Length: 235
Image 1 (cartoon, rainbow, N blue to C red):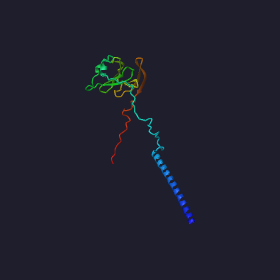
Image 2: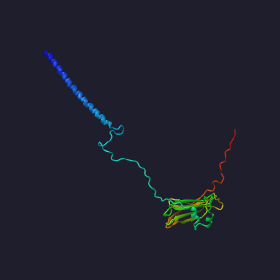
Image 3: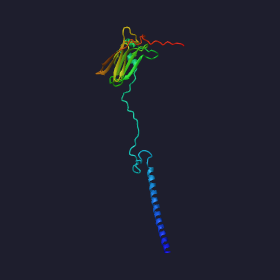
Image 4: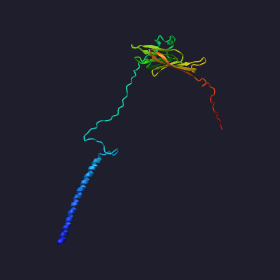
């Protein structure tokens, strides 16, 4: 019996030892589960893409800066050009030939053959005015004039060119005047060439700074050497 008792005691001891190990295992398992739960909460703050955890900073902290996109358009520096009555400027200008002033009439209705450009040429208090007067029938330039505004608001003539087929333009602060060159047998539509003259304002007047002459090809459009019309055949 003692043996039985002894073996029983060993069994109880083993059972007690097993029960202790079971409790220890359960405790360890609980600790592991708690650790896994904490790890799961930690990963919940991880980004699904990128480099892993997000840099949230200290708890309750706010971003130190925010990037916002803004599109700003720089304001222009050019002065607005006040519009003028170019026809009245030309008709009231004593430097314009009397014949041109008398011939300056509307082509149709109240439309005059006048082109007007505004821009910086003389560094005056306002935009300068370039006026080109043309003929009504074929729009050939007969006069180019530049008017500079005075301090009192009036305009003065600072450039005049009255030659056949003349036209003036503003090119990056320079005055560019083009005149057609005609031979004795040239028609208005087919000049022999052209002169392109560039003027720049200096010391109170325009000075020529560049001149280009272009000779036009007279063979083109003469009618010789045209490609013959292909003949059509019928089967």
